[in-house]
Amino acid sequence: MADYDAIVIGAGNGGLAAAATLAGAGASVCVLERHNIPGGCATSFCRGRFEFEVALHQLSGMGTEGNPGPLRFTMANLGVLERVEFIESNDLYRIQIPDRIDITLKTDRKQVVDELSGRFPEEREAIANFFDMLYAYFQELVKAFFLKDPDASPERYPLIYRYSMRSTKDVMDSYFRSPLLKSVITIYWSYLGLPPSRLMFMDFAITLYSYLEYKSYHVKGGSQSISNALADIIVEKGQEIRFNCGVKRILVRDGRAAGVITETGEEISAGCVISNASKITTYVDLIDREHLPGDFFGHLRSSAIGVSALSLYMGLDCPPSEAGITQPTNFISPTEDYERAYECAKTVEVSEDSGLLTCYNYMDPSFSPEGTTIATFVTLKYGEPWMQIKPEEYHEIKFRCGEQMMEILDRVYPGVRGRIEEFEIATPLTHLRYLGHPNGSVYGFDQHPWESSFFTQQKAPIPGLFITGAWAGMGGFQPTYQSGEKVARLALKNIKG
Ligand SMILES: Cc1cc2nc3c(=O)[nH]c(=O)nc-3n(C[C@H](O)[C@H](O)[C@H](O)COP(=O)(O)OP(=O)(O)OC[C@H]3O[C@@H](n4cnc5c(N)ncnc54)[C@H](O)[C@@H]3O)c2cc1C
Image (cartoon, rainbow, N blue to C red; front, side, top):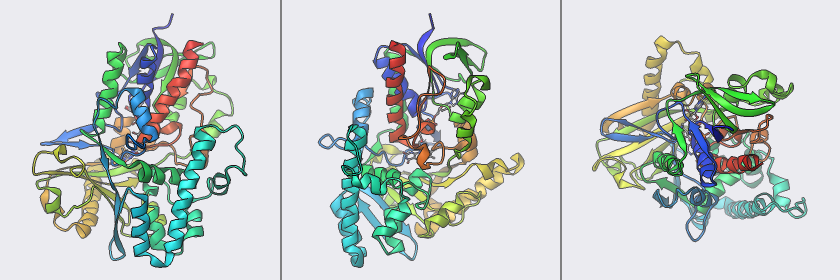
């Protein structure tokens, strides 16, 4: 008799959502987390009188009670909805490309179409056509994939067949002429970690639609509140979470995942194992190679480790308005050429990088002490060049990059620098340290078509082993919570035999 029905390695979004779903279904489950708090990326940390959100900028897919999005159902199923306050925002984003454009869009299709048409009157018709297509495309996705139409065919779903696998750039080029307009519409490429030329339209369309139709949400207390709520739910159902408890081996017996060995050498048995660690860690470090099919690593080699992040967390000694910040979500890009901005993610230094300045006090004035502001400026960076830095040079380079980010900010928000009371910088190496993921990747693998959740399996090639989280499909909050719920349902079939 095994110690547990399931062991979950890692308490990130995917791991916690999986464990809460299993616990809710009456399975016995033990979560083993290397860090001392739940959440993985979805955590917070304190400096001075500020508690900083690590990762969440805009939560997608929630929708309203009257128009619920898929994440609202997941949060309800998990039991989080009644424990955490989700704050709706009507702000999609503001984009500032100095000397080119400064435009603010709302989470309202008509407002977006009107605002864009006002700025780009010569493309009015194309703008309306594009958003009509986006909405019709999403309806096709819902019917064909989410409702699993058994008669799906190119005739029934022409937009899916025409657009899904094309690049976002290709689709944009087929609708619009103005490079600036295309840049304004495609800024969410940075939430997916690949530039429009390499980003599958399906992923981009789902992301844009999810924010536009289902609004953007802030979480009272930050994403740590969701992580804590999930941890509470697991424990209240009589199940277990152990912190400071890394896993060093997955046990395979008679060809099945049968438990784990922790970093302190304890052996724990289970009917199945769900890994929220990266796929690379899971298959290369935690499992003996002999248990995997011979051609397995060839497939893994075709994947590329995705982007990490460089973040400047700032606690300001004034309200947002005094720092000139007037919106919660502000994309700042020195260039409208996102292909160039993306190339900057492959370097250590910050030059023409696109960045996102999030001001948390807009949605929730109590997010920081009265009269203060928490604002975070984040840009994408691959971990690879950071891995080459000598330890003795790391601190100097980290603070130099922080200074470069500050210079970009200062051009758009003059005077912000003088209002900083506390700050911290997180680099790809910080994420590597806290998450244990290769190169500190925060979105899993680069989001190429073959990594999307339509093509990747959450079932591992070893019976009884499952993968959840960003490395099992798409990165980001909404996809990883959904991935956890989905993997638990797969595991339950395994548990019930
Ligand atoms: C700075 C930053 C900004 C971001 N901004 C956004 C955003 O605005 N919107 C958005 O949607 N997404 C954003 N993301 C991405 C999003 O946060 C992640 O994709 C998502 O949270 C990953 O969830 P996950 O389930 O893959 O688990 P992870 O968060 O990757 O957690 C994995 C957990 O597994 C644990 N673990 C690993 N190995 C072991 C082991 N051997 N034993 C025990 N435990 C182990 C780790 O300690 C960790 O707790 C951001 C991320 C960062 C860091």
